[in-house]
Amino acid sequence: MVLPRFLMQWCRLVVLVDLTIILIIAPPILADASAAPPLSTEPWTCDDMTPGLCDDLTVEQGWIPTLHGIQVAYWSYTKASSSDPSMQPVIMVSGGPGVSHTYELPRRALACMHPGRRIFFFDQGGAGDSVLPNNATLVTDPDFAVLLDIHYYAQELDLLIQAWGLEHYHIVAHSWGTQVALQYALDYPRNHLLSLTLSSPIFSSQQHIDDMWDPEQGTLGRLPEYFQQRLRTLFGEGHLSNTNDTEVQSLINNVFMKFYYRNGKYPDCVVDSVSSFNGLLAAALWGPWKFMPPTGTLQQWSVLDRLVPELAPSGVPIFLFSGGNDVVSPARVQAIHASLPQSERRLYPQAGHNTDLDAPNATNYDIADFILRVEQAAAAKQEFRPVKVMTRAIEDETTTANPTAASTNNSNCEESKKGWRIFGEILAVLAAFGIGFWVGGRRSLQG
Image 1 (tube, rainbow, N blue to C red):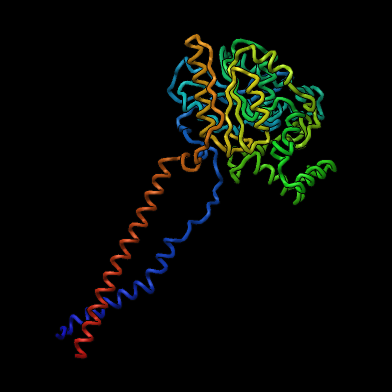
Image 2 (image 1 turned 120 degrees about the horizontal axis):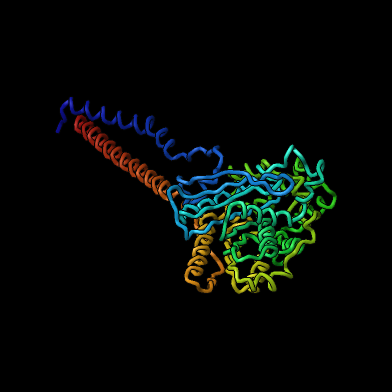
């Protein structure tokens, strides 16, 4: 059988077109489709890292005078158009000392989870927007030496609560903020405090450091021996404050990324918080680094002897939690939990010291749940019954942060793969069809 000439020409054309697509056009398209997307240079944001954060929060900002003319800046967040008198306010007491509250902004999600609840943030005196009047410093004006006494911060918190007109409230504190919150709860024993949440709590300055460097249960104490030696040597020689030194930078970054904030890249709220850091105040209160022995006025601070005789009988429900890679000793927190019958305890295994950033979804959920159960027990005039749950798994924050977006991205990826598979199948059929006709035609002519 001899194929007509026009059909032979058509077969040759099909083969040429197929070969052109296979050899010239398809490779760059397929290479581009399979290439990894470029790395994002956009800064991380705490909003993106906070699952459940709503976009209809209203914020109120103001300043409240405390001691010696210090104006303390505050912010309160509520879900717009929501009002529920049963939802009592939450006061956030941030860590530091000397840093602004902004690194704690993932806790705004508590206002979204409980519409009608107000969440208060504030910058402690001398930190963030709560600057000293007339550009005064601790060095130039002795009046502000009051900032070197932890009792000032407990009194500051009391003055804020009075100015806000709060009758009942919850306190959620982190790190250094737990020291302030504990001092407040012990020095201002009232029935108005509904609950006390302590994230990575510190009960004694010196014991905190001893626990941290413990060779068996401490976090820094289990680092390689030479790493520990260099930290101690540089600290003892006074060189650890020289952050321009490359060795110091490497050591400090390792410590912070292992035990404080473990996500690997600082988001905007952390950058903002650190940018206004009052290093002079922090050094005078604690020392140059929170993970080294305290040399400031907090060196002898401790409330260990007051917890059981004073805080336990108060009956105030207490929520204690920390990270599995925290500089705060899990064993110490567990021991305190065992001594306070009204307390609950959680451990977030993958998180470091900043659980609000390493595990925002899990911790926000557990705080909201704890606070709600406290209020329900109070409304029913019943004794609060702590839930005995020790470990809390951390969800994959990258996928739970925006489930809709993650689902859309996965769907788009699968659709793209499916499209390229279909394209390849059609291409293969056309190529086989064209080559078959061409070969068959040539054999016919030769025959």
